[in-house]
Length: 444
Image 1 (cartoon, rainbow, N blue to C red):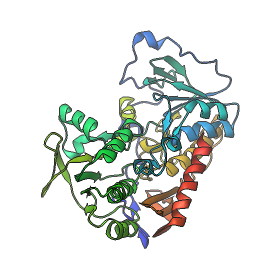
Image 2 (tube, helix red, strand yellow; image 1 turned 120 degrees about the horizontal axis):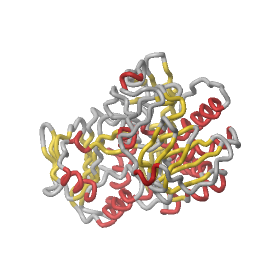
Image 3 (cartoon, rainbow, N blue to C red; image 1 turned 180 degrees about the vertical axis):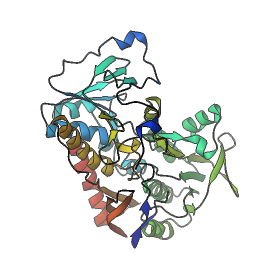
Image 4 (spheres, helix red, strand yellow; image 1 turned 90 degrees about the horizontal axis):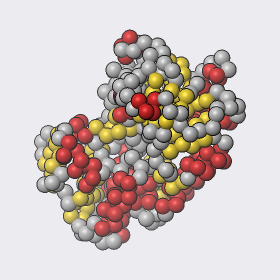
């Protein structure tokens, strides 16, 4: 599926993976529990240590931009709903704006927040736990802390990486990739590792990659390449960033990024397009493509992404999705055949941008959908909004941007109302910071 978006137009986004799918194709019956990952017997009848529900309970799994927004806005839509947000992480670290942290432009506190503060300030419950299984028949979520009964369930677990798509299938090699050359598009330890890599890099080739498919944050890899190159340029490191792109060109804001590559980072950033990676040797530090090989001294290798493995384990994968995303009604967000289970954020199958602003505006709508359903009502589909600022220069801080919505014609989705600013400026950089501060304030 092509995602390249230019100033002069937009490409049609395929709706084949999300339209016209049937429950029978998924191989389940309405109301049937998914037990692909069976919870231990000791946990199946052991309630988690939570207060008794004071109203219809909505359990939200995954506290990223999507889950945090849905939890907050469910309470805003109907304060009588009993909302429980579950995540295995003890605190929040933002992937959006993290490239600025890698380049020393913001501090760690700018990206890190307390789930507990968000729960307290927005009047819902936060539970640190790992989801093991879901029984949709009895409407129970199983965690290592015990079971949580629900009236509605929202799954927002995000993405996982598909290393096999770049020819890395051996478990030992996959683990070596994850530990030594993490992609750093799943927030937390991966970013901390990459920050250290950039700070300690002494010279040579620093390899970055852009995957094919609908990956998380379309402009993110290009912004990262610019900002890491800016660090090398500022510190006069005798090295360069080599960016291998699986796509035929920069996927979004192409003119703005190419201008930054050519005008700001000549000699520090080398861009290669249409590089289909077929294998990686993490020990010899070699990347193999269909036509050539690339060596590197250090790297952050971003493979193709897929819907979080939890979606597959629960038997909710869309059989038509090449990236193993969820099988849901594309306009109502509920699992096909089950109007009490919803999937939102980057695990959805619709070809929307897998970005923070998209997840957040979508989350506000999903909260309205669930609150309406709880009252026996329906609301019409509303497009999420993709607003994205890409910082391409650190000093001065300059950015480019895109703002877009989506349309649906009954068969598929397309970009709509696209506004692009591809001439970098300090004014756009200032807007990027204000955008981030406003979103963090809202979620927390």
